[in-house]
Length: 341
Picture 1 (cartoon, rainbow, N blue to C red):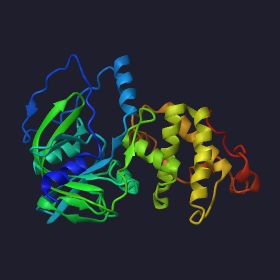
Picture 2 (picture 1 turned 135 degrees about the horizontal axis):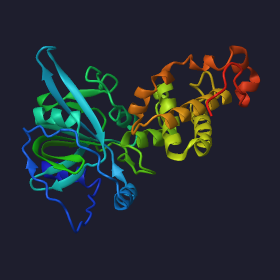
Picture 3 (picture 1 turned 30 degrees about the vertical axis):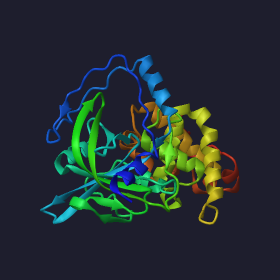
Picture 4 (picture 1 turned 90 degrees about the vertical axis):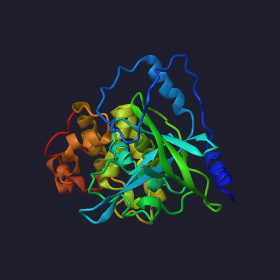
C-alpha cells in the first residue's frame, strides 16, 4: 500500500467539520522554535461561547494520543510524554499534513517546541484505558508508559502498540488561536492496522474535560479496567457527577453506577457495594465541592487531599456501626460526628 493511500485511509476515519465564522481575529503563525506558552487569563464566557461548546459537544470526535520524546543526557534515557486529545484533523493530502490542538499554556506544547517530532495514535474502541492514562495530569518524573506496551520510533518517539493507526510527523508549524495552540505536522510515516477494531469515538454530554468525559463513559459502560477502579477513581466519579448535577440529583447516578460496575466485574469484586460508605463519601465530596473553588479534578484533589485518607470515615463511625449488616444495605447516620450538611 503506497504512503498517500495509507495516509488517506487514516484521515477518512474521521472527516473534518468546518465552522463558518463571519469574524475571526487573525493569528500569526509562530515559528516552532518559539516558546509561546505564557499563561493567559480566561476570557468571559458569553452565551454564544456556551452555545458553541454545546454545538461542538454533539459532534463525535475521534480520540487520539499524541506522543513525543526528549533525550535526557544527565539521566541517559529518553523522557517519553503522551497526551490524549480529540482535536485531530486532516489538513492536506498533498502533502500529507494533520493538525491537533493543546491547551494554552501546556507542558506538552513546550516539549514539542524542543523535540520537533511527534506521533499521532488513532485509538481503537478497546483502548479506553490508554485514553484515560494519557488524559491524567502527571508529574514530570512519572513514567506514563510503564503500563502501556510500546516501541521506539523515529527520534525516540514512543509508538503505542495495537492502535487502529499511527502517524509519525515532523513539526510543520504552530499557531496560537484563542485558548489553544494549533499544531501542524508533516506526516513522513503511517501505518494502518487491518485487524484493529473500530475507532474510539466520544462526544461531550456536558462541559466536562476530555479526561473526565472519557472516564465517566468508561465507568458507565463498565469498560473501565478494574485495576483502574481505585479509591481515586471513586472520588473522581463522585466529583464529576456532583459538580454537574448537584448532590441530590447526582446520588442515584453514583449509587446505581457503582452497583452496575460491580455487577459487570463480580468475579473481581471482593468487598462489594456498601450503602453507608457510599452515602458517606457522597456527603463528604459534596461538602468539599461547595467549599472549594476548583475547575478541574486535579485542582479539587490538591485542595482536598484529606479525601485520600481512607481512615477519614473512622472520625465519623465506629467500626461496629459501620460494618453492621444494616449499614451495608441501608444508610445509617454516624455515631461519632455528624456529617456536614
